[in-house]
Image 1: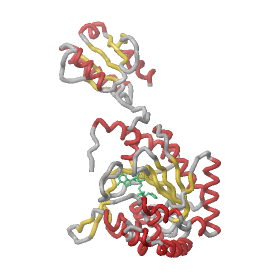
Image 2 (image 1 turned 90 degrees about the horizontal axis):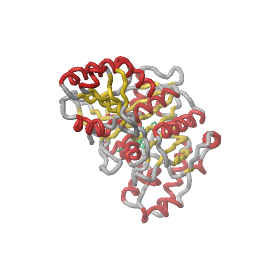
Image 3 (image 1 turned 60 degrees about the vertical axis):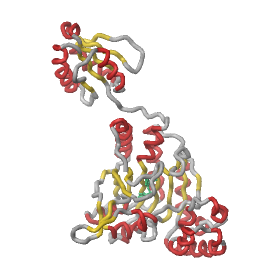
Image 4 (image 1 turned 180 degrees about the vertical axis):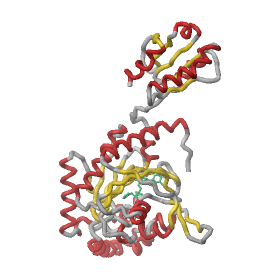
Length: 410
Ligand code: HAM
């Protein structure tokens, strides 16, 4: 679990702000749910025989002896909240963000507390909404300047189709059981689909020869998938059909997808989701089709930090003041300027020091401009404005003209 330090925070805030703008642009409403839920909720939704529920949850008994868990993901909580508050009367587009907790083996891109932004759509069953959530993710990547992601898609069909497929898959894997590692042999009995997700290089040949779920789809599932693919084609979104994309949570049916990068090593899935049309009813709500995804903010931050260009919304100005009277006036000048230019990010230097040392700090702050207030400036009712991020002479701007200077730059 990590602290997010002030040096990294503008990247996080920029990501979160831009994501919110994109989500609102598609009519999604934010939902905030508790970090703790009863353990049973996750066992019933994510699945008893998934890695998450079997070995990764932070669970404990509270003072009443009830087993609670820190949420390992957001979908189950959203469904629980929607059932509890009756949010199913008409289609709903919801989004959420916040920390999730999984006791995984930590490595680059995989943490025990991590942050997701996710969406869940309730009440829409057609492939058009699957297409919309993918379009939305593409807009998100563009909004934060993220490049180099590839989209993989698959269909897991409906329950009955999957059951038939799983029997065939199990028979196939049984024939080659000597090539399976211990984990996969266990999975073969409990959750054979997950064997397809193994990264063990010794098993890749067996996995490559396995029957494909896409060959076991019924007519309606096939049509749904074909229309989803056609929608992506029409929108100019490139994708690969990966028949081995199975996801690590059990609630999915039909469409599943992942956005993947090769730049983060083994933990390359930046965003993942799909349909889960039976979960709401399974948890006691009305029969309600659903689709959603979640993206991992740590992975996004790692990609953007690794040289991808995200223009950060940093400080607009750093106010430098030298001399007793200018220092006394600086905070007032800063207040007036903030009043006059809503949203201006202005840091007013405190604690004195020479021009040179204050300028150094101004430069290091990342601000676009240094505002310079000395005795001379104060006497003449002006302020020096020195661009710090581009070449340019220091200008003299009358104090009352300063708001106009910044509004003009906005
Ligand atoms: P998930 O695939 O478990 O799906 O997680 C989604 C994303 O969260 C991953 O692609 C990854 O970027 C990030 N993530 C997961 N675990 C970690 C970790 N230990 N450290 C860092 N990042 C991580 C879900 O959680 C589903 N609830 C998504 C969904 C929403 N499906 C439908 N609606």
